[in-house]
Amino acid sequence: ADAIAVQGNDVHIVFQENNAAGKSVIKYWKNGIVTSITDGTNNAYPSEITVSGNDVYIIGAEFSGVTRVPKYWKNGVAVNIPVSIVQNANFYHIAVSGTDVYVAGNEYGASGSKPVVYKNGSPIWLNSLAATGNAWGGIAVSGTDMYAGGEVYTAAGISIATYWKNGTEFSLGDGLANSKVRNLFVFNTDLYVCGAVDDASGNGVACWWKNGIRSSVSNTSQSSIATSILIK
Image 1 (cartoon, rainbow, N blue to C red):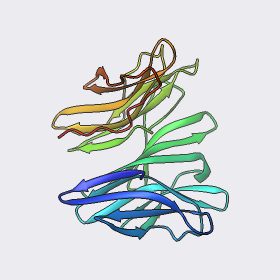
Image 2 (cartoon, rainbow, N blue to C red; image 1 turned 60 degrees about the vertical axis):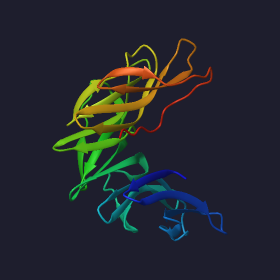
Image 3 (cartoon, rainbow, N blue to C red; image 1 turned 90 degrees about the horizontal axis):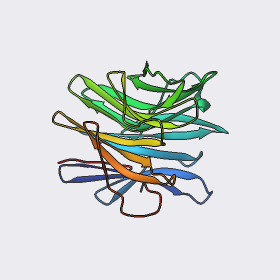
Image 4 (spheres, rainbow, N blue to C red; image 1 turned 90 degrees about the vertical axis):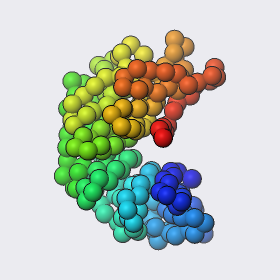
């Protein structure tokens, strides 16, 4: 399974499964009933699922020939994300607030990777002092505030765990050791972010931040990373 969402008593899971032709098919499971989202003609890969009212949204990508096309599906109907160059964009997270649909990721241009959120098909470029970055670390909407997580990169190539609130950049990493954001969650007025920070040996240590204060959750000597967080 690639992602899960729970609403009331309903459990929604999205996953991929190869068909007889060896193509990856996006499939959706709700309370034991499986539905194919893509027809299996082309490889397709899901990243995340969210539920808003009676509507189910799945974000991922589907290949057209050798081109990886970022898109989301609303109740099984595909919506292409209108990026500048489809093969140079990656989107892994989706959030819905009312009638507004937000997808977070990055686009590559002549000057490198740029973090971006599309709201209802229109790009919101996330400001950064760094030359390159991405918004691969989740998206959440709370009231009128939009949060996106990801990384930006120093000139030396060190990744800095970062989040944006309404497009304004906030650093969680120090730029001395690699740090990453993989997801975030807003609960009441608190922002929770999860990811990893490298230790002195260069191994990732899974961690989470609450309003910018970091706590480590790893108890292993192996590299680890926290990829999802939920507060109730």
